[in-house]
Length: 291
Image 1 (cartoon, rainbow, N blue to C red):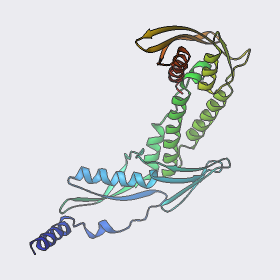
Image 2 (cartoon, one colour; image 1 turned 180 degrees about the horizontal axis):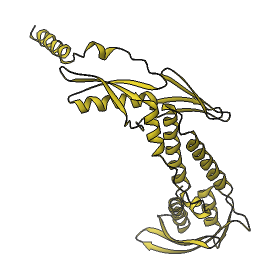
Image 3 (tube, one colour; image 1 turned 90 degrees about the horizontal axis):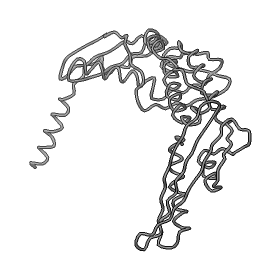
Image 4 (cartoon, rainbow, N blue to C red; image 1 turned 180 degrees about the vertical axis):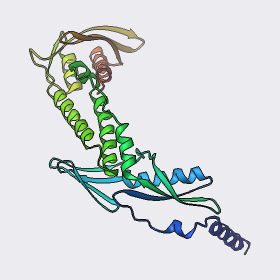
């Protein structure tokens, strides 16, 4: 009986704890110019922040876009964009949109603060577009070779943000187009890079080729000079192989030099130890090339 009474008291306090005003539960229809969003919090600012986050999620959580000559149309809460080249399904788990222009339509304090915001799509999109720039990227061969994944990840984030801004209001279509073209240019250049690997060690040459997933050709744009020296030691019952690599990567008048040391051990023989050392070298070479 006491347990039942405790449950009933708990339900009573929970039901009384949240008592939003009637207008808070009302569905406000977004349109091409404004987003309406509600939020609640212990303070006025917390309620506003919650409402802004809820508004951002309307645009950013799932934006289904089909681009057609970068022309956009709006239908109430749904934003569709069209292109003759690609269809994108974008799912954003974070909130990349920060609203700076909004109006408090309703604010009421009861058990906590409740707020209704009216957010101007055009003004917010313009502010975000004006403050989003595509940074200059060094497209020289060595920079692309060493930083390809980092560059592409940065561009993907920028493209995602620009798509969300355009979903809010289509003001950033030129910047989005430029970002996509730059990404395409860098991807094409990376896949067209050619290497000439010159080495005294065929196994080392194979490791570099597999790490970069690029075949070696004579008269290539990038020359890689790779040499190795192996020493062997006995430590107790273990056979130890130590491979020292000296690698020089050169393109035009620019070059980079690396020294790598890899060790492997085995209780069987030196060939097994050396094979294990090569595996260590492979991982270190991958880290050098950011792959």
